[in-house]
Image (tube, rainbow, N blue to C red; front, side, top):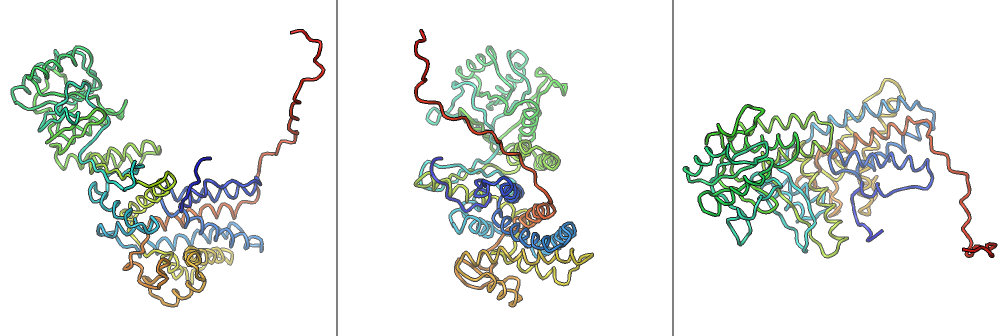
Length: 504
């Protein structure tokens, strides 16, 4: 329903495919799984994974029909995939500069130069660990917003704290930061520290679970009388995550989290226990802490701790939240806003930006190889002379050797050329950087021409395609729900005849 969706993203197309025949649909769903897995692991390469899976399944099924042992075929496929992955890793080169990051983005976004450049700019601003999100813009242009420092989604507790009426924001220069884990309902316990802050002449930001009634009123009155430059915000997050985020803020600002669990009472807090930052800006929705006083070593230690948690977590939601915390500590947050003339265009561009973003992240992680399907094509040489334990396993290796040529053949065929001829020409050339540039119809050094793929994207596409294809080849039976034999109820007649003489 609604406007048609224009896309070049394999997984988006795969998700829309539903076949009438239940058994055919099972097969389609398994191939849809290939695209989804590639998307989850690398965020790109979903079309490559689907093309590879089709090639392996087609060859594999033909071999099974010819009487070969499906289990041995699968073993052969697995041996070959391991060898190809080793070959890809050996030929991968690390991404060195912003221009290479942009190039990866441009290829993944279907040659859109603006997309590649915006992603490269965003990565430069927030670093490799930073969070980059993609949103739909209101206008026609691409925009890039970068939030430096740590930002969390809690605004000021009272508009009376505002210091800049024009922008409706609170701006505190060089403030102390009190980080309190519980609610504050009375300021009695805080009086000693408030007096110390007033004497220092610097502003104070209070971050607490909540600041209620009397305490908030007292702070507002003090602010209005000009005795105290102060602002208060609620702590971000909920439950254990709130504790963790307050710990992050404490590390970033070189402060201590005031928590009774740790035996620290408000009455005993000194200026040395408060966090510090160069600047804090608060609007009605967000608080941004810029240039916290935390030591680089402490922050690095905290970052490593979060990384270790990311490694062991099994929940996607938890992983996402941990990565957000990591970015806020290590880099910053960039938002790429995608514009366009119509809703259809915006959605299509947003899809491409998402793909390109994942591809550039993958390139930074594991490096790059020449693009256009050539990395897999040349990996066939790693399989030459490789034998399995028996003829059927060797046939499985052969299936992969032929299948990994499929992406290049498909690209050439989409560009109006004969895929087999292009593959043959390149294999005869024997230069692993040489490839076919489908956008210019020229054989050239693809790395130099900027046609590059992230190694991780190519690797996961092959591994996921081989994994699901192996299951399909070794599946001997499929079970489906039995269709309902009961006929549908006939439609009711217009009038209800035979009901005359009834009094209502």
